[in-house]
Amino acid sequence: MRRSTFTESQIIQILKSHEQGRSASDLCREHGISQPTFYKWRKQYGGMEASQVKRLRDLEEENRRLKQMYADLSLDHRILKDVLEKKF
Image (cartoon, rainbow, N blue to C red; front, side, top):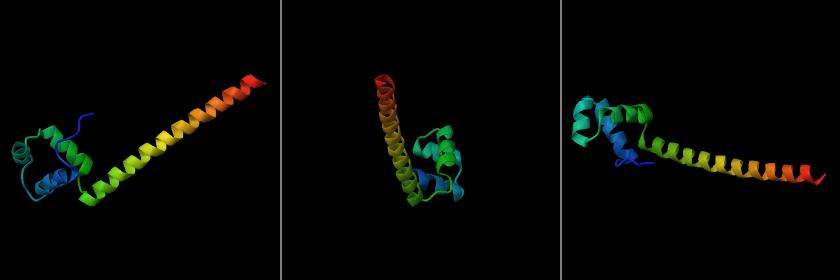
């Protein structure tokens, strides 16, 4: 998946300047982004501070690891269950 050329803190800074009264079209032109990208950022990061974005990223990473652990354990459980069914 393609990563943004902007960091989360840069995105937050762009959104803050929009909240202070600058128009979205001016910001898009200045930073070289499309308006749909700007509004997607506003939907995703609107009202957040940089520390909250870092916390969100950490929680998403933890969630990804937990899902992977669950998938591994579920597969192990299924394999053991199949072995027990075939043995008797």
